[in-house]
Amino acid sequence: MSTESFHLDAEQIYQHIDFHGLINALALMHREPAADLKDLLLEQQGETGKNYCLIRAAWQKGSGLGVKIASVFPSNQTIDLPAIHAAYVLFDGKTGVPTRSIDGTALTYLKTAADSALGSQLLAKPGSRNLLMVGAGAMAPYLIEAHCASNPTIDSVKVWNRSAGRRDKLVSDLSQKFAIEATDDLAEAAAWADIICSATMTCEPIILGQWLTVGTHVDLVGAFRKDMREADDQTLSRAKIFVDSRATTIDEIGELIIPIEKGVITENDIRADLFELCSGVSGRDESSDITVFKNGGGGHLDLMTATYIEKCFRSVT
Image (cartoon, rainbow, N blue to C red; front, side, top):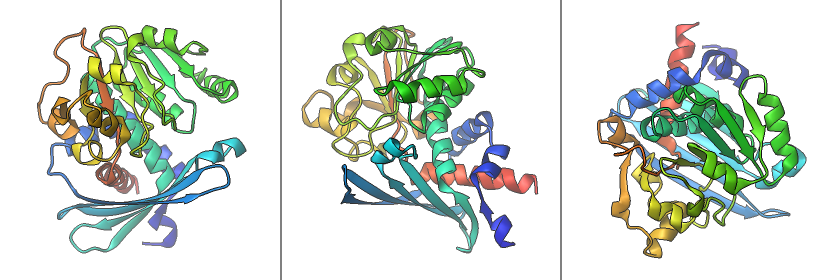
C-alpha cells in the first residue's frame, strides 16, 4: 500500500461517508461483543485555561485494533480554530499490521454525530419535527445533519449559542440545506423542541428540566470530564436516562457522576446503553416520556467508525 493510499484525509472521508450508512453500520456493530478499551487523559494549564490530550485505544478481538490521539484546546475558538484535533491509526485485528491512517478530526466529528443520531433514532418520539442545537462549535453542523438523517421528520432547526457571531455563521452556512434559524431565548427554544442536542464546554448546567415539555429527547454531547455537565438535576430526575456505553459514562463523566453522588439519581436509573438498545431492549415507553441520552464517546465508537470508513474506501478503490 502506497503512502498516499495508506492515509485518508478529511476530504476523502467526507466524499465516501454519509450518515445514513454510518448510523446503520453502528447499529449493527453494537450487536457484536464489546471491544476492550483503555483511555489516557493528560492535561496541562494553558494561558487561558486547561488543555487536554486524550488517548483512546480499542481492540475488537480478531477484527480490528485502533488508537486515537486527540487534543482538546478550548480557547482555540477565540482564534477561529476547532477546539479538537485528532489522528487515528487502524490495525489488523489478527496480525497487528497497521492498515490505515485516518484523519482523526473527521473521524471524531462523524462518530460523535452518528452516535447521537443513533440514540435519537432509538429514543426520540416518532414524528419529531423540531430540533434545537445548543452550541455552535465545530461539532454542531455534523450533529444537525446526523439528527436530521436519523429523524427524517425534522423540518425546523433552531440554534442557540453564547456567542451570537458563531451562532449566526452556523445558521448562514446551513441555511441552504435546512430550515434553520437563530434564537436568543434558550428557555423558549427548549420548550419548543422535540429533540435538544447540546454540545458545549460548560461545567455548569445550561439545560434546565423546568423548561422541558413532555416527549422531549435530550442529547447531551459536550461533557467529557468528571467536573462537566450540561443538564441540571431536574432534567435527569424527570427523564428516562440512557447512555451510549455504560463503561465510558457512568463512572467517567460529571453529567452522571455528580447527580449520582448527590443522590438525585442512582446507577440503576440508567436504563440501557446502545449495546442493549440495539439488541432489543426497549427505549421510551410512551410518547410523553422525556428521554436523556448521554453521548460519552469511547474508543469502541472510533474503532467502529474507522472500520466502516475502511470498508467503504476499499469498496471504491
